[in-house]
Image (tube, rainbow, N blue to C red):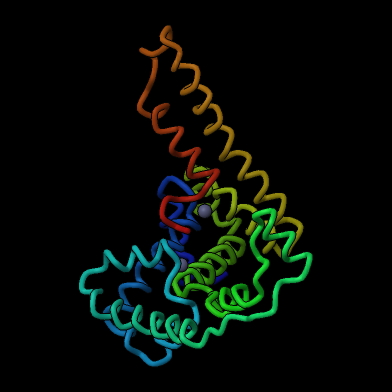
Length: 240
Ligand SMILES: [Zn+2]
Ligand SMILES: [Zn+2]
């Protein structure tokens, strides 16, 4: 199997602790957002897409906030969304007909959703496409998972997978959905199992040593276990 950039990036990501797919996705998003600020934010197509997405998701909007020199670009992109939003407000005409019995009941029960005009406005303002950075991340993660599956038997990938602690739960599930051969399923499941066992062991040690009688036995590795477990269960910080 020929090896190219994707392989080497995966191999390097597997040298670090924690889910390699989370790590690669985050790296691609950082690169993408930097590029957006330095080159593309004013591009007509980008502006149109951002407007359709109603800006960026919370995570990526604030990541952009921290990009050096993002102020002007973000002001332009946000202004586009605000214009659209205001146009929807200005074009809004309240609908007179009283709600039907079902709607009145919903209102009486405090459930909301009884005003069709309000629902229509809410739908008009809803994102019409995913956040651009989320989409970039999702595509990069899928590409990295394909790379992982192609090189599953590569010794460095194999060793790195286990040593890094395997994948986070979301990316493990995504990997299962992307396998194409029966042998890949068994390999992925067994390696994830091998990667998780020591983490659970260490987590149990961390919990046990919280008893005052064993506190002196606590090691730095035990102390780091709960963060590693958090990442395994919920994914790497700041990825979604
Ligand atoms: Zn992950
Ligand atoms: Zn996003």
